[in-house]
Length: 555
Image (cartoon, rainbow, N blue to C red; front, side, top):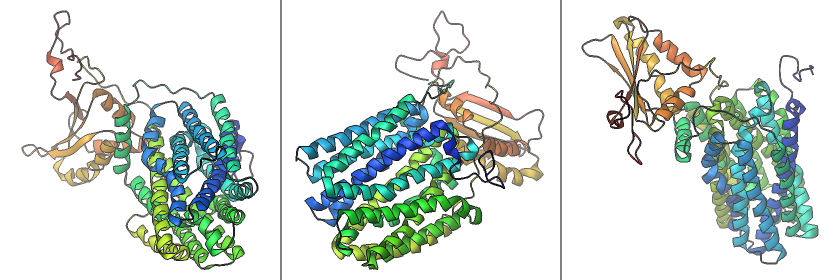
């Protein structure tokens, strides 16, 4: 390995990001936290098994933990993109700690019921749903951009190291000291991560614009995803894969008890096999991606997941089941890691947390719905049937690549410098709007078709950066005159829309501008729609169109 931490040929080694002190500290603390969560999961699932013995109730423990990710991730991503990610992480971890502490107290008082298990699992899940986007999107602040894929894979390895040994430890704790010990260990495991986050002296980010309102920030994130075809395809594949592939994890207690005739220790051991396979998959991911396209990697992972689920449903020997689950764990790891890397590298800085939150929503939505669905199939037709069916459908899902192929995604590049400040002769405030943007191009008639093909590429760019109602039109009396039009809700939204343009976005716009052959540059007009406030003035304000909003009303 070279001195810079990369191997010959420029490949970054899997452990290179750990040389950065901040990343190493957070990674190590998160490892303890992951151990605690996996140990707690074993305790909660086993407690529900003892309290009810019902397959659907056991599977719903996983659903209660991951449901907050599905419902809150987009909000959490919007918060993380708008405010200090370190502070958001601290609040989120404190919430998760309170849930873990509450679960421990209820258990110590011998008041544990299925309702309490669901409630506190939901509280813990809520805290971690808020923590996830802030943590993941801050990785780019901890390591150089070139090492980001390796850092993302290492974070996955952290979870799967815990998955490899945490369940076994959890099973041992439950067998020796009861579920209370598992819940208490989880509460204690959050403390190192809280300390590290508290000590992190994060460089404050400055912006000339105030943060978006929460509702609008969520909408901006959703619109980015909807108008970014590569990201949209990855999210659809993520949802399908996790929905079909979660049966092994959700039904693992029943695999141990019903199919293998074991107890809590065997349950922890089977989860450990799944986690060991995931670690192996993470360590091999870089080499696999060198030899295969992302689509092929996802196909390989889906095949391993499907075969592992089918084998676990048919096997009645612990050793064989463990080997099959190792393959399934590797499949789960390489597919979800590829999805995560694709989303994070393709998203510009302003929306990274929201794009990751959308990925979390897809992952946890699939796990939540999948846990519920496969739990009901197991309750009605047996655990073995549920696993075999889910594995078969998982293999068939490879065909979804025909409709939503994994895109070839390159990392977003920031533009070289800020855009020039727009000229204004109205004293606008941030809420002034709507703002209509009209751009006029003069294109020779013989180049009209090529221009049109190029300029329509701007539609998704305008929409995903904050514009609405995009259109392109051609003057019927002057065929050389083309007009691009879109609007933003407010003046601040327009300024944000300009700031969000990446180097790739500007390249497409410059290609459209290159068709312009009129006198001078293209003409850009920015107009205040329904400019009621701009025609009101007070006697002591010069008559230059100064906006004086009415009380409680923005122009």
